Amino acid sequence: MIVNLLIKMKKLLYISGILTFFVLMSFMYVDFFSSMTKVDYIDGSKTLKFTTKMNTNHISDAIKINPNTAGFEAEVKKYVNNNFDVYVNGSPKTITFTGSQVSGETVWVYFETGGVSDINTLKIKNTILLSAFPKQSNIVTISYKGSQKAMNFQRGKEVNEVSF
Image (cartoon, rainbow, N blue to C red; front, side, top):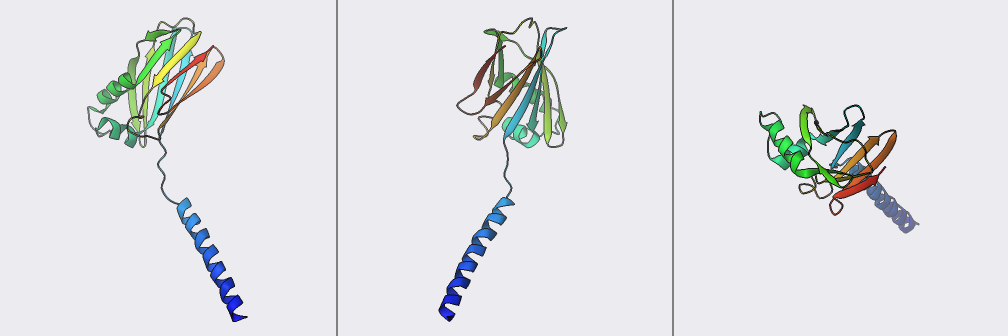
C-alpha cells in the first residue's frame, strides 16, 4: 500500500516536473528574424515604391554601425542597394534610396524604381539579413493595379518571380 502510494507520488512529481519545464520554456526569449517589404505601383508616375521594415538591432548588427550615429542611413542605403535587386519583365531596374527612419525597435527603409509602365513579370532578389541570420525570412507583398501577390525569401531561396 505504501509502495503503491510512493510510486504514484513519484509519477506525479515526474509529470509535474515535465509540465513545469514546458511552462518555463514557453517564457524563454526567442528572437524572430524577418523583414517585410511592401511594394506599391503608382500608376500616375509609373513607379514602384518599396517600404521595408526591419528590426533595428538586426540591421545594426549586419552593417556593424550604431543606429544612433550619423553614418547609419548611408550604410543602410549601401546595404539595401547591395542586397535587393528588381527586374521588371526581365530587365534589371535601378533602385533609388529615398530615405530611412529609425523608430525604436524598427527601421523603415524607403526606395523606388521608376519607368515602369506595365508589369508582366516581377522578379526580386532579396538577400537582406540572410547572411547575418541563418533563420532570416523576408516577406514581400506587391500591389499592382488591384492585384496582390506575395513572395517569401530565405537562405537557399533568394530569388522569386511573380506574373501579373
